[in-house]
Length: 497
View 1 (cartoon, rainbow, N blue to C red):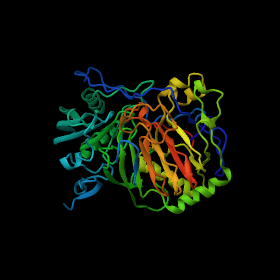
View 2: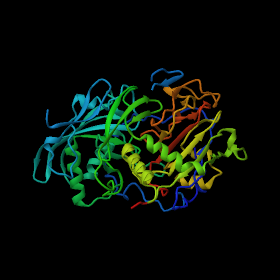
View 3: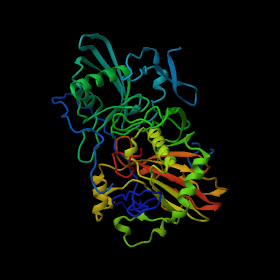
View 4: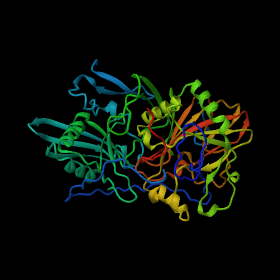
């Protein structure tokens, strides 16, 4: 679903333009895998984390289930309901004790709230931390302790007594978390970890440089929140919990991005329901995200510019035509002041994923006619497979940054065929035939349906299980669109007044 990347050409109208990244072609020789789970804990910390640059980094380069086989998805007064699960449990926030508009709402680490995050299997790279401060003595927090659930799994839990931690000693607190949870340190191939509220609101990252005043406020925010979620890869991922789990989230109330990022225009209120379709790979469906008239608008805008799609060729596939794998048509729409609908959908996507709009690529629109398809492939770029493509390696910084998630919108109904297939659903082995649509999770296209599938694990490593394909259309025409959301700031979207 894309091309090999070069510098985005900013245009004043929504057209397809050269230089857009093609989606990686299927890697039919690649064996299955996944991120390795490190279980060892560091026992003693001697050094504080060195302060680094603000995250996400500013980049100035040119780059810019149902069933385990053949599954088709059928598709008190001071507490406010935030998330609801399939069995009726709700995540509640203590709205009656908020003391400052700048501090997050407290989410108690109650059994009911934990049930919205605890998995019955290891969720690599995301952790729950519950802070507790029994007393406040002037400038110091007395008796600060925290308990944690490593990889959101009940077996990997513990408690740490951090003692008297001055409100300005954020580095010491970070180091304690690194030791307790064996968090990976930022490096050439590792994005800095980050701490979030249970709503997905970013609190602080491993390398954030803060003033003394901001450090004090951050410590206060962590304690105030009580329940904090740590993502090792630095970007938010909605925890799947279990197949069939649902949660309702607010859109627009949280707009991730640089300080002061807000939705333009009048205040808007909107919710969306997220349901887990798969845990391996992590795939969720979203209801209430896009309207039928918005689906029609995107088709109308893209129609005159549709061209047969290309792919980003891996080293072993140089010289082969894209039609060996992909026979659909596509184009990219760039949001400008003249396309407010596209801009609002981009903002809505940022709020839905809790990842800044600046991390998005432009909107890709797809059209599949009769028998047209896209064989199984990954959306991430594996640096090992692009060693002869210096432009791609520079774009992804040799693997440090990559596509984090794919937000996929179905813009039309399809009478038969056109499903999105995930052949490695449930951890299945690598398929022998990348054209096979008979095995795995299959999502039927329906106008207005949205899915998110995560190309990277929460620890920032590539998820080989995210292999997916577009099945041939048998009857009808399939229109779809998607947003690729990266784990770092990119330079594809531009500011819109």
